[in-house]
Image 1 (tube, rainbow, N blue to C red):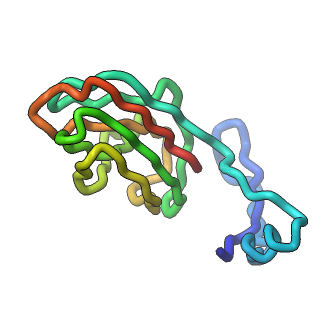
Image 2 (cartoon, rainbow, N blue to C red):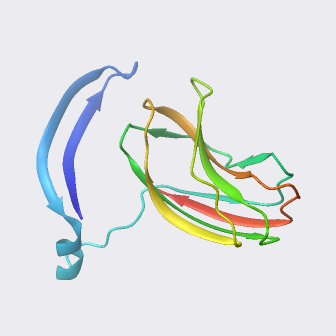
Length: 140
């Protein structure tokens, strides 16, 4: 996977003071060489019961930029219920979600759309019954 390497210096009011693109890095090549280990820089656990039509959110927020990629892994019961992985923009109140998953287990990666801002991640119960057990991790 090729990723860009850059840095940004922000003022206290989030004004960009300096931004510099440093180039591209092939993470798979670096991992194979044993020079680095790539791991998520943020991880958000979510667990518990979810009533039908309700969303369970993680407890903290994360500043996301447009195009940032995140992955998820979710397990739930009863397996006949459907879920969606969602993210909620604290500033605008907008919510983005995945297609519905069923079967009690789902995982994948998503590239964010929408504006940059503070987000919470959640699991939405798209089914008609309460999800009695759910465990999820969102990683960036």
